[in-house]
Length: 315
Image (cartoon, rainbow, N blue to C red; front, side):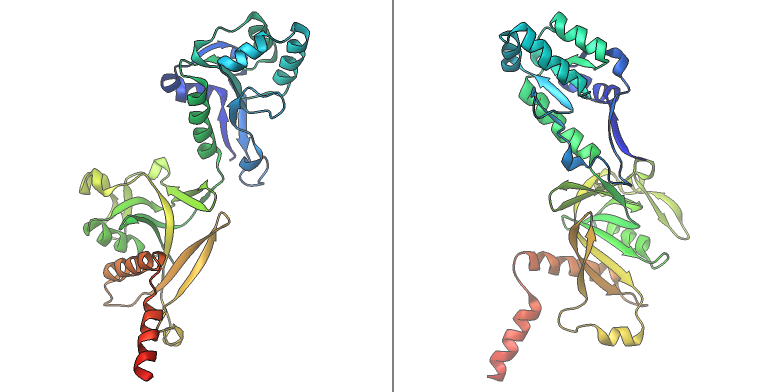
């Protein structure tokens, strides 16, 4: 299924916030911007989503503010007709007249003829552009679903991964009892919020729920309260739980641990692999791993500090 936004959806979502009124091109309500996430067709970075009226750099949402309105008004009739005809022929998602500017008969005729939704907004043009750029870029961003539990632990977004049945949900439950927050269980959804920044959230159908084997489905918000939940968070770290053989345990770097990266949406996300074994307090280990990761971000490396101290004693 491609991510898509129709003119009708955009209008309904922002009618109250932007003070939208639909004045023309009502037959174009199903016109949409679509992003084919499977075939990568129409990638979001190649789309000009929303901007002030521009006849060269064609936006999906063309916003007409007072300056653009005056420019059109002062342009020769035949030249204006030619520019507007080409603009409507490009099939933008919609056009918006900011500050409740009155649509000219010419604009109404072209909108109805081309079935291009024409709205007015009570907000100024810059507010409309800023709001819709943010909304469209986030809604149409390429997304990926991963298997795991996504949590807010110590203020950073942490994805717990591992084979089915290894104990991810039980670990999440223990972390919740220690004051951390759940974002999504089982199938968290991630998207590129900004260049080099991956953000994640929960599909609406799974919001608030966590499955724990033997207990079934738990409503975390009802059980722990609103403070135990968070809607979205930037993904900063992956904790991968893995059962190790004795040989694999021996191969782990005793000084630096098992660190690596995983590429998600072309962004390299740090990953720490933690061996799972009976008797280990995984919640404490995960908390310590995250504390150590935060220190490394700030520039401190315990292994290098340890090595430097040993060299002092040797010398």
